[in-house]
Image 1 (tube, helix red, strand yellow):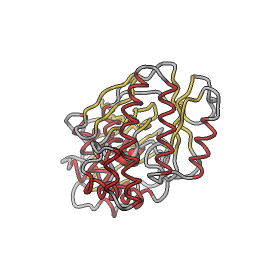
Image 2 (cartoon, helix red, strand yellow; image 1 turned 90 degrees about the horizontal axis):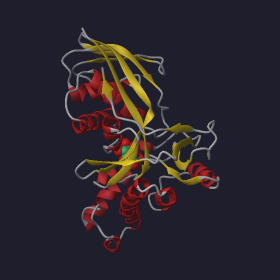
Image 3 (cartoon, protein in one colour; image 1 turned 30 degrees about the vertical axis):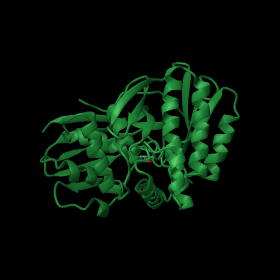
Image 4 (cartoon, helix red, strand yellow; image 1 turned 135 degrees about the horizontal axis):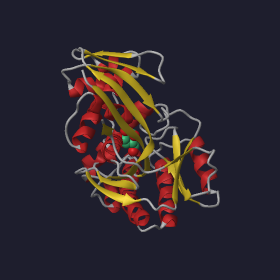
Length: 333
Ligand code: GLA
């Protein structure tokens, strides 16, 4: 028996949503909200209690169907167990400061911390790939790799420009003067599973016609007859360009340009990708109308959840939302 403590951060995506699963670009950062899994190895089950859950997760090492597990949070635990296949069990406790259902990847913070606690050995990219598979197994949603990779590979003081075609990571310094504020729209995310899978299928339909969206020219999208599929593809192609421009602007300390790109991203996610909601739109408008706020956009999958804003240090009252800092990735001790 060995005592283990593993920690993984949540993440906020500054720009680049619904681009990761098409091999495009994203620019998230790991944040100073995270999840700790603490306990000891031993036995033939993984048994976890959580500060946020009334029922424990009790997962045998073999023979479980993650999607059938109860309580629901145990599905992620079972997802990690089914993909990692540890030979020794674990008994411990989960404590998290990542708000669930907000779009800050509480699930990735859990799976990444848990995989480390259960003995994962390998690179951050390998850890992210494993946890992506674990989350797909536990949720049934065909998610991309952005969240897990950010939790695994965060760099303190930096956002990560990730090329999802080869998972190359370029850290981008976040200017000290910049404040990143995450504000909840008041709507829990909903319909995320089915609508997410539908968006992903529409992107695949587009690339079956025009080739990989990562390299498709905007002008080539005219070959797509279906108007909805065309708009989905237009979001992805323009969003990839915005991510690269954003990383350049942020790294150069040009917060005005970076903020403008965030607003353009939000509009594209609403009009072309149709994952915004009236509450998210109203919140973006409210934030962007404040002096010292450079830009704001929905962050993550959409359909509710949070907005992220880029602002001057004292522009947004400290009592509003989460004022988050760019942090390093997951650790184990
Ligand atoms: C969710 C998924 C990510 C990504 C975003 C949208 O957070 O887990 O992989 O696709 O939605 O950008």
